[in-house]
Image (cartoon, rainbow, N blue to C red; front, side, top):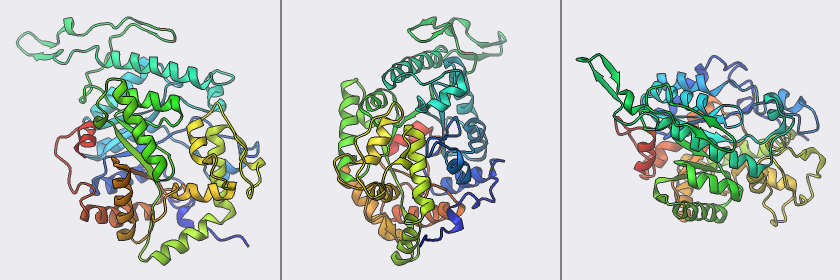
Length: 424
């Protein structure tokens, strides 16, 4: 018998039309009251048909779409908040470097120094086909292109020297032209003259966020990001990931303590542990949950998981899509069936994250101490962020964490996003 799925996790939980931005602004305000570091606006650039060779599952269950452009959403949220960081996902495939550098600077001004760019290279051929390509370049080449892309935008952000804006009323001078210079970049993939034609970013340059999972992705993240998001499952793999990132960062000449690695966790809290477990069990065993989970993984890996037996172990797979996501999901060598992997994905391989706010807070503190971590990025275990889930986290779990001294109870006024990240 198929278990019923409560409406609070479904695409109708925000009346099916959160596209004015109001829903996300309300969520951001709740997160700001709870003193989160930042809100992450993830994105995709296509409607997938990877699962079952059809768009049916994606459009029926609103998987990876509809997606509104994260840039105006970031501007709305930045204008409606004072302290919360706002991170938008922008693809190195979809933007020319000059346009992205200018967009990020503009958003950092609107957000008052609280904007972050989540750097993605894009891992789906269908997305590439929306931008004039038949397929994506190989993953190694995409990261090589991303390395050069970040180098270009960084040079553009530095094309205005720190004291270039003089605001000299006596001479009627806004900026010293001698301190705003072309970059004349000529690389393997990009050629950009510069300088940037926006005022310098309040942070010097926007905060950089990345989610490298494969060895090449980890290297890119360790060399580039201020904050890294990891989908790694389980305490041991989390510890290994953070240790590896820190080693790579140090080898690249960076201070590992300035890079904040946040592990994705999916806690579920309720008034009692029994109530939380009941909600969890009703959802993870539903056909809808299995379909939406597998369709989501199919989308970013370009592998059709509808072809595999739910009650058998997955064969070893590789992809030109998001290999790191595939590896984190598949847990190679664990002996788990595909159905078990789907259930694990709901909790990100962590036991103890379903229960009362106090129980879950205690477990998250324990895990963070075990991995000597920097914190977590919270995501709903069932994929759809609802007002109910936001309230349970912001008004239930976070206060329990604050009582343990595990997270801030107030912001330092005037801090940029980068400064807020480095406070902990």
